[in-house]
Image 1 (cartoon, rainbow, N blue to C red):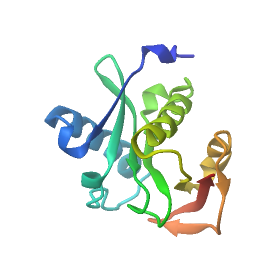
Image 2 (tube, helix red, strand yellow):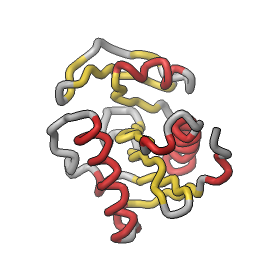
Image 3 (cartoon, rainbow, N blue to C red):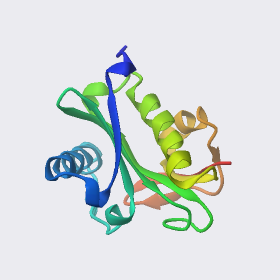
Length: 153
């Protein structure tokens, strides 16, 4: 188990990201969402520019990242957390849980307290439930992967 105090968390708007930070987060997203999950899809969806990006660094490794959106950016009347991922190297160490705790707190800090909606991969329903997210609709296919909408009230 990793000591999560070793993770250096930062949150930046798209414009604040350095070239190296942007490259690291896009590379990690490609490693996980395209290569590992064998899913051919366009990750660069023109939403990065309106998001805040959380980055969890362990030394020089980007271990985990999310995108945070204010209310009405992605879902009507909801803030949102998306592109949630932990590097394979840091899975099963508590890094993913630390990432979600940090991301939820950052939504509140940046946007105020409000409900958060996510599009969760179905197999992660139990993981997100641990943070208080509840399924809020039927399963749907997104890029060949089963997803469910979930809300943290």
